[in-house]
Structures are given as structure tokens and as C-alpha cells.
Amino acid sequence: MSKSRYRATQASFGLSLLTVGLILPACGGVKDHSSPDPAPDNSSAGSSGTAGAGTANQPGAGGASGAAGASGTAGATGGAGGTTSAGAAGAGGAGAGGTAGTGGAGGAAGGAGGAPVPASGIVININGTMVPKEKAIVFVHFGHSNMVGRGTGNTELHNYFFNTQARLWSYDGTQFTAAKERTATEPFNPDQVGGGPGMAWLKAAAALAGPDYHFISVARAQSFLNTSDWQKGGPLYSTLFARIKPLIGKVTFAGAFMMLGVTDRHLPEGDWPGFPARISKLIADLRADMKEPNLPVMACDYEIGATDPTIKVGSPFAKIVQPLMTSLPGKIANLALVPVDDTITMQDDHHFDLAGLKLWSDRGVALMKDKGWLPWAR
Image 1 (tube, rainbow, N blue to C red):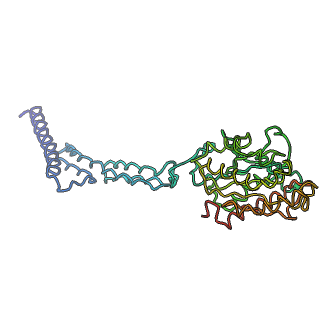
Image 2 (cartoon, rainbow, N blue to C red; image 1 turned 180 degrees about the horizontal axis):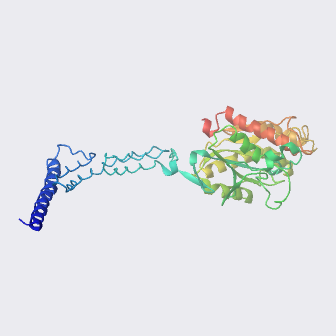
Image 3 (tube, rainbow, N blue to C red; image 1 turned 180 degrees about the vertical axis):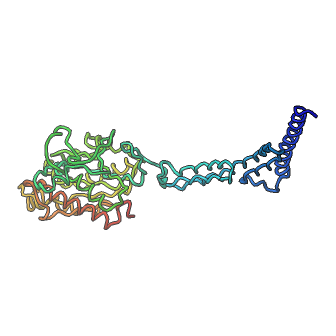
């Protein structure tokens, strides 16, 4: 045989062997995956193909690589979170040599914004913060010039009265604003300086509650005017109730505190004995309109520290009205008198200064606590 023909024959034979080497491993690889397991193992890598045998001086072709393991099973979806936590994402099942499984979706967050749902199911929007009805606490307050406030001295207390504090609000019937004195500004004299008891009352109440409570002042006060001027049907009552009405059913009314009595000296003397009846009707109408029949009422006791000759202790007016004021708790349910004595200091002959207003407010809130009238402590 010629050398050229021998080489051609040798090449042809080597090619045949190469073809066999390629086919056999491939068949071996198929055989490895042709018998399914009872429970497929998606995490195993495919076996490597067997190397083919080559002829002399010719390298055998590498066997085909086995198929990569299937993707790992996706992790289970995380359970729904509680009222404050989102569910954790499920872990992906990673296959060895296979593609990692996709992680399970995270559980849905529980509750609106992670906040617990209030017992009533009612919330109120206070300047963008959704507050449960049970934690939106409203104090209604009204009265004469001491409720408006004349306190200007006691500079060490200016921050307490005239600066705002988180979660303390005033509400005027349409909007909430950060509370500070005056909380009961006279409409005809909005620029007059001086503090009243509203801010001190809010702060005293807040100091006894948790940090997630909001305290709201709804106020109306005016100098000089008396219990006849405050009766239902008149402008004072109507203005006060117009500020209260939008909140009914949406908040918790903790109580009303009032300063009325000494201005009844401006009535004819023959009307002085009617003081308890006028107060009783005012409170009954307010409770009925607010749909709060048991609303606590904290009334200012007689201003025994006053030196104004028309109202000071021993004056003709005081001899009639002071004992009538003392009788109010026995005539009106859930009414208490906030004590006034010579430790309640005065700005002038009958207006409390800031120290006196703070002390009076502290006493009033403490009295409510002692009687079990604070909503969060009932």
C-alpha cells in the first residue's frame, strides 16, 4: 500500500474511533438522568461525561458536561406580620451547582402603618397624624377674664405657658394648631398679652399620660360677661359649641373646666341668688349637645384672694354668691370645685398670675385623677 493511501486509511479509522468516543459518553450521560428519583433532587449538579478514547497520536474528545442541576425550590412566602411587624421573606432553596431558588415573597405588613387598630375603630387626623379616638383627649374650657388670662409676670414660667409642646393642640372648629397661651383668646382683643390656664391644664394632664396621647384645648372666653350671657341661645354658647361640634364622635372628651361666678356681680343684685340655677342649666345644655351626659366639670372656686372691693370676701356680693358656689357639687353631678386660697397668687386685684394659674391647673387635674375622671386612668 502506498504511503499516501495508508495515511488516508489511518485518518479514516481514527475518525471512526473519535465518533464512538463522542457517542458513548453522551449516551452514558443520558442514562444517568433517564431514571427519575421518587422525589427529584433538584439540588444535584449533572455528572461530567466520560472522556472518549482516542487513537495513537490523536487526543480523544472530552465528554459532554452533564446538565446543571435544576433551580432550587423557592422558599415559602413569609407569614403575615402582626400589627406592627412585616412578615420575613422566605429563604430561597439553593441547589448545589444549580441556580439558587428565588426567595419567597415577604409577608404583608400587619395593620395600617404598623399602628394598632383602636377599640372604637375611629381615628382622627391631627395635622397629618392619625390618632385613635381613645388617645385624642379634649378639654373644653370657658369663662371670664381669668380664663382668657392676664398672667404676664413669673418670667421663669414663660417657656411653660408661651412655648409649644409636642402633641398639645388648640382647635378652633376648623383646624388644629400647636397650643400655647393664649388658648382662649378674646375675639375682640387678640393681641392682648398674658396667659390663661389652658396650656397649664394641658401640660398637667399630659404629664400623667403615656407619650402617645394627644391633648386638645377647645376654648371660648370673654372678660366681664356673666352666667346669663353664657346661656344657650346666646353668642358665647353658640361660638363655643360650634368649635366642639366637629369633634363629637371622633375624640374622647375628658371634661370641661370653667371660671364663672365673680362676674355675676355685674347683674342686678336681685339676680345674684339665681347663680346655681344658671350654672345648672348651662352644664345640662352643654352635656346634652355634646352627647356626654356624665362629662366631668371642674369649676373655679370663689376667688378668696381677690382684693377688688366689689367681690372680696365679706362684700355684699360674696356673702350671697360664695356659699352658692360652694353648694354646686351637691346640685350638679360630676362637678367639683378647684380650690382657690391665698396660695393662688394674683396679677392684680382679682386676676391670677402665671404661678397662680399653674397651681390652680395642677390642682384641677390632680382632683380629676383622685376622682377617677381621667379617661386613660379609668
